[in-house]
Image 1 (cartoon, one colour):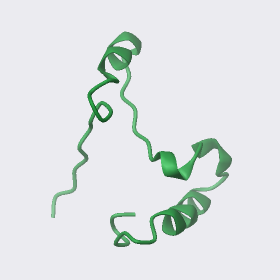
Image 2: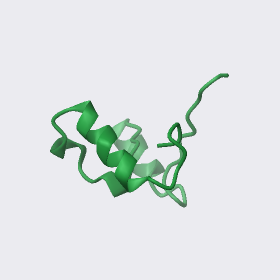
Image 3: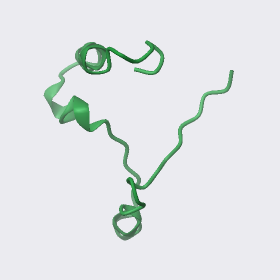
Length: 60
């Protein structure tokens, strides 16, 4: 199975001007909070399991 990501520029494409101006693309899961609070990948994954507990494991 091929895996892929869909990149959207916010709910209404509101991020396009910012992305073009700064020449970036961003991703995020706001329910996980600031990624800098996690000192390890395992901590982030553990919290994702809690925050997205209703989702299938591969979706988390």
